[in-house]
Length: 221
Image (cartoon, rainbow, N blue to C red):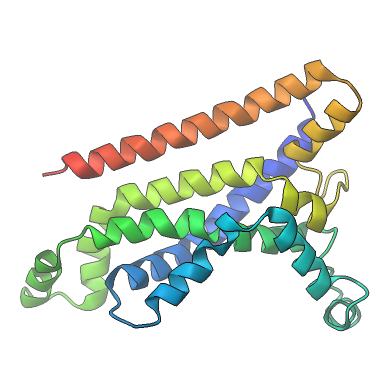
């Protein structure tokens, strides 16, 4: 087991989920309730990372923030910030590609909250914030947990964007998925098996958590 790569993967997954959670709550709730005509366009943009090959996203990231671009050079010279082949660049790219995994379960959970429940809370004197905190959020909790689980699992297993945006910098951007690829290239099947099995277990646990949350939501009185 490459413990250094495992640490990078775990830190990246936890940071991605933690940073996406507030945005996922806001955007998921807005998409669930808004009558805006812009909703289909927003949902289409949200789904793009699921449909596009990760290499496409990685390629455009390099075109936008690479060291040879005007924006990349400005960020480096002015802010001392590199968004390619660095952990911070990898984290920002991870936020982009994992957004639908966080938002979609949350959106479905909020959409399942009956409008009559929200209206009863308002009639009872609760503000919109109190209704969200005391009524909507507890009812949508299974979807929130599902979004967190899917985001964590997908971040741990992401390969294409990680390779193109982060490369394989030991201790900074070299994740378990990259380490597996390197072990296979070196014909170290035993090491690759161990790390691949770890990711397989994590993905299975995340899916079980998602389905259990969905079952709890459907069977809730």
